[in-house]
Length: 499
Image 1 (tube, rainbow, N blue to C red):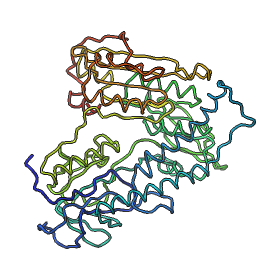
Image 2: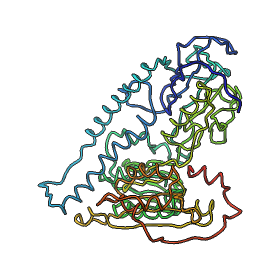
Image 3: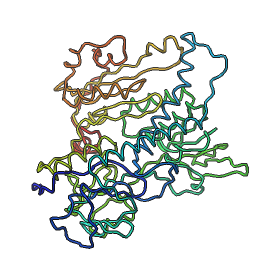
Image 4: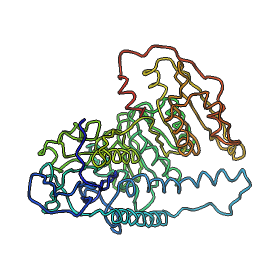
């Protein structure tokens, strides 16, 4: 890629945000224009960050609206915290705690406090923009030429346009789908579900299953496939489903909803290929997300997209139009907020520091805030076999110290996947309490390419679950085979796992 021209000293704001009224950001004062060219006096960049107004938001929230902050990881994690207390109440009995009455949860208090925190965070984000010298232009935006954006009838031009509009929940078009909610709506329900059907087997489905189960709702999860979490390590998939089942969540595997029926009493039924399950107060679809690219004018200016609406980009996040760039979920690469921030940082170097920089997707850690939670980094066992052939696998499945007094059936599963030839740690996986926090630290080791010998030479912190990763000594299994010639290619395997 040729070195891009320097376009100014201010890189603008590059963030992964989505799902509110369109907000266009510029890294200097925006200049209304009706020109199709990009003269040198134009500001360096216009960043389209929030498209459309298709979804309901609490009326108190000021704009701009960030998907992760308002409709993703932050409010979801707050609800996860709330839902964990019921399990902790049960754990506490074995430690001598007694309660005069059964603890009661007030849904309205949770939602009010959650919304207050989101309002505080939104104010912080707006101040970040202001302090960075960013001009916010709020409205519905549409790209009209390679350098110009129309925001509610007013034209703004810049040398570069950045698209980071994120994605939106997808609900399949089946009879009765109008009775269903998505993950956005689930964060602001007026009342807690008594009995909820969650359709989907991905991380969003499992996280909300844990949330509502922990808040004492009856939870049923309908999965089209045999197992949850397609693409994750097989051992992790089996373990988390077993542990969640022990906490009262009912999984309906290989059941694909065909219709949602509403009774005269207002209750909902889910009709599947195997039968009908009745009596739900809510039906939630967690069946994936789609890029927010409709009605942005992308096709007319020559930006290429995939069938699902994702923007096609090159290694530097450039689209088919030289002046238009895209980062985050809208590109459907690795759809994680920290990854979008990393992509934005790389693009800033490319455009404004004369330092062409590709996003680095090696050893990207990720988490599922299910209950119990999952943390992982690197290759799964299956991916490692396909990529390297000869691997060694170390696993541990044990009862944590806390559970010895609580009497609950909680367990922890941990796994290391090694290259047999180099002893390099290719993948690290954990399901159990504090897994995301633990894996974040070990991700540094995997990213650095450390070997099993490096892990073995590290002194553990005792007594902790994390020390198991540095005390595993005997392989659970050794697999010796050449990489298969069919299936995913090496680059595809690496891209899927972030290695």
